[in-house]
Image 1: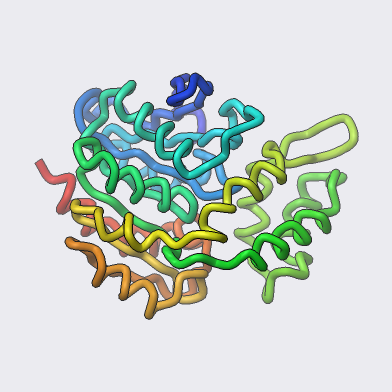
Image 2 (image 1 turned 45 degrees about the vertical axis):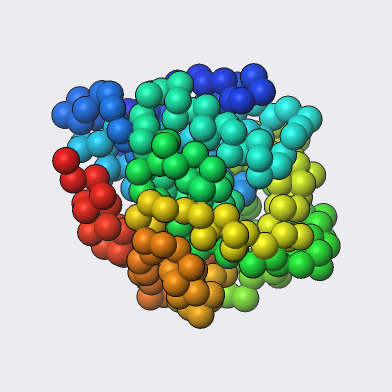
Length: 286
């Protein structure tokens, strides 16, 4: 789908933060009532959902959110807590009148989605969790990320340099992933001295503090709506943990995508659709 069909909607978060929501809905789809809300992961943006929106938008009200601190949304000093992200998502669902909504979340966006489903079941119809672990990652992971951010060669002289570094040269990645370079190129902005991320890396570290230090199995177990857990075979969510998530979920289902890494919906959009579409067709059927 062409980027030009995205329509920006400015929505206020729970504490007045201005959020940019992007409406992909096509004229043939309902313009009111229950819809689909797409929540990106840490450092992501609504634009990363464009391939998914392309096949959802003709039939369903399809909204992608730039979460606080990301994309075109406001970047306040804080808070950057799970509670703040959940409250923002609830405000968007209520303000746009798209509930009970089907939430599709990737990574941090998936945690936001299942926390919202657990806390506000009246707002959520169904849920898709993409490559997010409920187990605590440990404080060492925060130090590793801080070191990673420190080694970014910013400003990047060109957008091609962004592609090369994140897709091929990043020493924190085991093998080249061109799609990763494209992913990060979408969240860079040009400045007088070169290309820099649209987000603040310190705020990103604060945002992930909640899953570095705390586990989220309890909230997962309180999700009562139909839920699909999706992982890439080369992603961050292991098969055993994913299958335990399905066991813990009252109405859980499982899917996996061969050859996909953490950016499964972006890197392998067609295979991701094949894994997710049957579930969504069931829960979105009138």
